Length: 507
Ligand SMILES: Cc1cc2nc3c(=O)[nH]c(=O)nc-3n(C[C@H](O)[C@H](O)[C@H](O)COP(=O)(O)OP(=O)(O)OC[C@H]3O[C@@H](n4cnc5c(N)ncnc54)[C@H](O)[C@@H]3O)c2cc1C
Image (cartoon, rainbow, N blue to C red):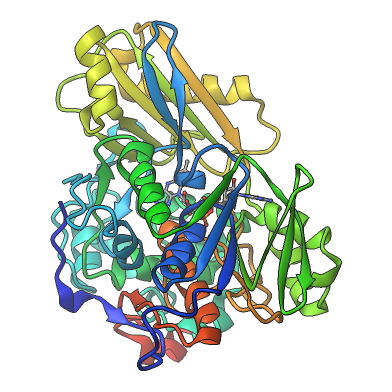
């Protein structure tokens, strides 16, 4: 259950005053993609009375934050997720969306600590930090063993100021062409401090430091840490995403009249008079006045390539330049014995090969807890982000297991009762210089919008929150045509506390 301090968030979008609660009953829209972005757009459109059709190529909703039915060999049914997710407290737009089905967000439970484990027993914690910059960063640096006062004197202070001076376009202008790795090098933090305080952070966005924009990293420092009045702690779902989010969400949307076409991919989009016609992979087609494309980066590029009516050169260029980052791997294990008492439900890791985090599912998720109650043991999930392309599945799995064994020695002799391994490549890249051509919610085509976690927002946002925010923005844009009331859009304070010193920080 989340309690939120209202002063923390800011309304960012320009507000069109008024607007009708219910638009003409003839208004229709297509939403391609049933992930967070697509369902956020569908929500606002359907609530204003638009007849919405959601088309999703998978058989389940939620996209990368979805879950699908599976069965263990012992017959136990369970929902396999695309991977553990943290719901941060400053995800105001995502929370507004999820409150539609659970006004108190009772399915979210807080993780009080978010420890970070490194080589040779190194450990940092993000719990109980002050919520405001610069006190949070001062306290983090004070409490770490990875650097002393002497090291602090050597830090590239001017460059480090950019962390406190995030200022939207200006930060992107100055830092987007630099890699995150080069920026972090320029701070001259000791190796261990850099690894424990920064490397894990940049990896959490699925991108390798050498292929990640420094401006995007600075935006994320601001969004998750410096400019985040809620603190760097997060909540987790107390049951699978399908059970607590997407099943009730589908019912909510269906009650508003939304049609779902599941298990069919959209292969092409054509203009159809003043609206759009989308062709499905089974030869059927769906037509509507407006459309939101809320698909993954590869999904969008395939769709645009196959749609001659979407050939506007600058639009086609921005889609062609959008890219996916390196693959990520998720290994879920059902072990025959528990992990040691006192292990945290979730830990991040740094400097331990490809391993990025460990979650002990039975410590927070009902379905896993039930399995452990019935069979003993534990349910453990390991993640690796930005996995080198040349690594094969077996090597990834073995390295993840060996890092688990070294960090949690009690798992060395555990029998793996069952396991699931996912290796996917559908998270967006934020490469150096990509901001200029990054796709936006608006397209050159009337009534056609984009949404997703790769789409540019004029305020700080990332991952699930960016998907929800761009979904709302896409719906707002489409509603303009029918004078429909806008959905409010929220953000953390959009500028850093030292934003006015940005020029100094950049010099
Ligand atoms: C392992 C893992 C861990 C993560 N952890 C976190 C976390 O802790 N916190 C956080 O905020 N975020 C996290 N994320 C990121 C988060 O999952 C995404 O940012 C978010 O879910 C993206 O939502 P979306 O709607 O933009 O895209 P998606 O969820 O990818 O939705 C796009 C949808 O479009 C569908 N589609 C594609 N092409 C077509 C087509 N042609 N026709 C019809 N449908 C199509 C896809 O099947 C998919 O359902 C994590 C992601 C992963 C993979």
